[in-house]
Each structure stands twice: as C-alpha cells, then as structure tokens.
Image (cartoon, rainbow, N blue to C red; front, side, top):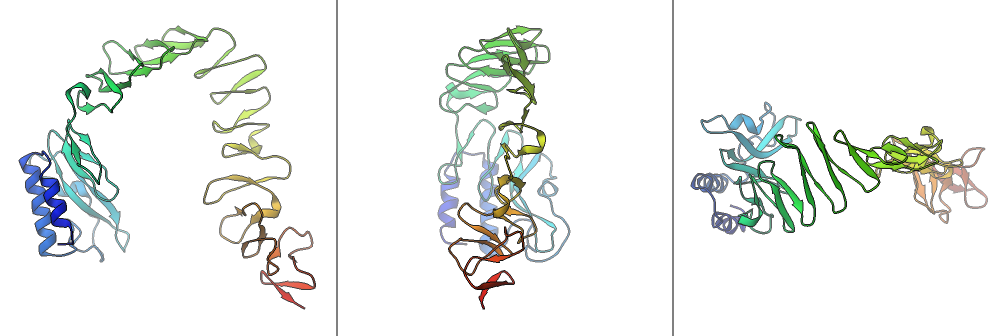
Length: 316
C-alpha cells in the first residue's frame, strides 16, 4: 500500500456513508495492498486487451451505474479504474484523478477535505443541495436560486429558472424566460417595447440583429465577440483589420500580421509581439542568427553581411 494510503482510507471511512460503500472502499484498498499497483479492471494496464468500460463491471443485482475513470491503454483500448458500482440513493462525484461515491442527498466535497458533505436542512432541494448563498426555489424541480432572485416556474411542468432583481417572469407551457425593463411578456416570450427583438436584447435605431446580438447596421456578430465588417474578417471573437490574417494556434484563432506568421509546424501560428517568424519558428528581432520571413525576395538575415541557410544566418 502506497505511503499515506492507509491514513486516506481511515479518513474516508470516518465520513458518514452507507455500510455497503464502506465495505467496497475497504475491499478495494485491501486488493491494492496485496497486489501493488493493481487497479480494478486494469490488471493489464500496460498491456493490450479488449475494451473494458466501467459500466460492464456493474451488472450485479441492485447496480444502477458505475463510478470510475475510463482512459486508453498503451494500445489505445479503453481501460477502467473503478471506484465502485452505484446503487439506489447514491451518486458519483467527480475528482481531479479519481471520483468518489456519495449519498444522493449529500453535496460533493473536495479531494483535500471531506469527500461527502451532508446537506443542511435549509439548503436541501429535492435530490440536490443548494450552495451557500442560495435558496431552494422549487424542490420538485431541484431549482436553486441566489438570494434576491425570483423563481420563474412553469405551472404543472418541470421547467423553471431564476430571474435577477428587476427582471419580469415570463412563461408559457414550453418554458420560462426573464424579461428586462425594456421588454414585455407576450405569449410566454420577451418582446421589446421599442426596436427590434434580438434574443435577450433590444436593438436600438441604427442597429440590426446578428446571431442574437445587436450590431451596427452592415456588421455581423463574430460568435458573441466583436461586430465585424463581414464574416470574412471574423477570427474567433475578434475582427481582423488591414493586412492581418486569421491563423490558428495553441491558444485558438487570432489575427496576425503576415510578418509574424510562422509556418514551422503543421498549423500556421502567430509569433508573439516583438518576435519575427522564421523557417524554424519565432525569434527575437535582436537575434542575428534569425532569418526573417517577411522579406518579399525570400528569407533575409537580420544581421549584416549574412546569408540565410536552413533557417539560420551564416557569416559570409
């Protein structure tokens, strides 16, 4: 058993839990101590074998689901690190490495504290537990709202939502909505008193609705980002201007000046500001061994009397 695992087990078993869950946890810990490194359903963790999904291990009478982590092995097949099988009245709480099982009425705790936290009576909301600063607006809908909000519920249905102060509740048989001060409720939908209705917004004079957002006439909404001149100038949530080109990278799409576009990898990326693009990546402009790629005649060296050879400057 790894160092500290007995203490972890003791601390976990000290938390309030059903007897059957305590037995499952103890059994799993004992198995790991007898065969170090062995994880449930992952005896061949470093080898090849058939896909082993967590749910396939929970087929006994009374099992209603599985709580575990699935990941590919060295051969690409699915393996399961099973915490345990779920039974009626239990739920699986996600963790950074391995999930844990709690009672359905408990609140999921944290890896460094109690895993399962009993819900105070004043925050119990059906089968869920409201967070601190919330109240139970509807136990049947398991709807928790922040203090000060108003519950907007559809009578005789499961739909409902929380409306912030100053918002008007608006509903029909299909759903609920919260109308702003410049809107009115008509047939269960929020409609602008003046101007064009655009989702939850009201477009003013000189604006038009573009994909649920009010933009100046002639411009388009770039995915809830800026309003651009045309869809061609959209780059993620920004607008490319002038000679800029939209390129993708590890941090997503961004507008980039051609002098900073590096094509060293499989995907064109934008070199950080203050650097230049080279055949091999991005270099600071003060590095005389860099070859700048923005020269119309081809790769040009930044240093005097040098020539570019395979992405690096050589002295003549």
